Length: 553
Image (tube, rainbow, N blue to C red; front, side, top):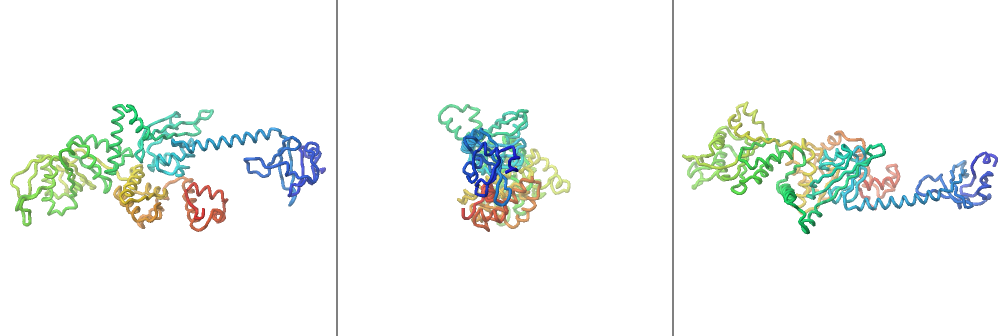
C-alpha cells in the first residue's frame, strides 16, 4: 500500500482473475472501488489495437486509461490515468474503420482498373478489374516494379513512369493483349513539399464504350474510323500470322514493311532461324497490290535436292529429260507470275543457279530447262537467309553481283532474346491459338511465364510456339506449372533464376516454393504454420497472395 501511494497516478493490484487486492489513495479517491471487487468488470482492451496491456473503462462516470503489468505469477499492477476523451476517440476510430471498409469496397468493385504504385514505381495495390481488362491475376502485380513488368512484356507502356517523370497527370490510349482498347490515366499524388508519394493509375476499357457510341450516334469521325480499321487489321494479322509488334524494333520493322510493300523493289530478310522471316513475307504480300493479281509462292532453297532445284524453280519443257512430264511443267517463278516469290535460305542456292536468278532480276525473264527461248515474267522477289552473305561473297560461295541485286532493301529481324518485351504477348497469342485448336482451357502459372520471358530462345519464335503447343497437349492439368517443362529445359531453370533480380523477388520465389511444398504435405493452415514456425494468419495471407489452395480448405 505504501509503495503504491508513491505513484502519482491511480494504481491498483489484482489477482489473475481481476479481483482487487490493494490500491493507493488516488485510486480510492477517484475510483471509489473496494478490495474484493472485480476490476475486470469496469475495464477492457481498447478496440482496434492488439496490445492486451493497454485497457480503458468507465468508473464512476469517469473514463480511464490503464497500463497493465505482471508483477509476479498471479498478481498484476494497473496504473491509470483519467482521460474523458477516450470514448470520442474510440467512436472516431469506429467511423474511420467503417469509412476504410467502404473505400475498400469502392476500390475493389470499381469497373475501371485501379493501379497504385509508390514513388519508386513499385506496385502496392490493384483491384479485381485489372484481371478482367488484362487477363492477369491482380496478385501478380503486387510488389513488382513497373519497369521490370515492361521489360518482361507484361505491360506495354506505363503512364506511371511518365507521371513520375513529369509530376503531372498523363493519359494515353493503347491496345491490350486481349484485343481491347484501353484509356490509361496516371495521376501523381504529391505531399506538402511537392514530392511524389504515389501514382494512381485508372485503366478504362473503351471497347464496349466505342461499340455503344458507334451503334447509337455518329460519334466516330473519318479519322477515328480509319484508326479503328487499322487496329482491326492489326488484330487480324496477329491472329492469322502471329505478328507481335510490341517492341520498338519490331514496330519500326513492320511500319517499314508496310511502306515498302507498295513497291516491287527486291527485299532481303536477314535473321536467325525461327525469328519470323516467313511471317514478315506474308505481311508484305498481304499489304501489296500483288495480293489482287497473283499468288505468294514459297520456295525453301535448302530443302530441295540440288539436281532438282533448277527444274523446280524454272520449270522444264516436254521431253527435257528422262522421266519428264510429257506436257512439260511450269516452275515456281512462272506460278508466281503477277505475284510474289519467297526464296527462303537463299544462301543455299548453287552457284550455277545464281546466274539464272541474276538474269531474272536484270532482265525479268526465265528459261525453262530444255527450252530454246526465254519467257518474260512479272514477279516480285523476296529472299531470306540466316547466313552472312557478305562473308560468303568473300569466300567465293555467293556471287557478288547477285548479292547487291538482292540487297536492295535489307531488313534484319532481331532474335527474340533481344526483344524480350515481345515474349509475353507471344505467349498469350500461342496459348490462345492452341487452346482454340485443341478445344482446351489451359493456363500458365506465372512462375512458368517468368521463366519463358527470361529464357534466351536459341530457336526464337518457332521454338517458343512449339514448346507451348507441346505443353498444352501433353499436360493433364488445366494449370501448367514450371515443373511441367520438358527435361531439356529443366537445367535452364536455375540459370534463369540466377539472373539479376531484386531481393524481394528472390524472397517471394523461395516463399512460394516453401508454401507449395507445405500444401502438398499438410492438411490445413494450422499444420503448415506449425511446420514453417510462423502464425496461422500469416500463412492464410501468403496463400491468398500466391493463389495457393489447401486440400481441406
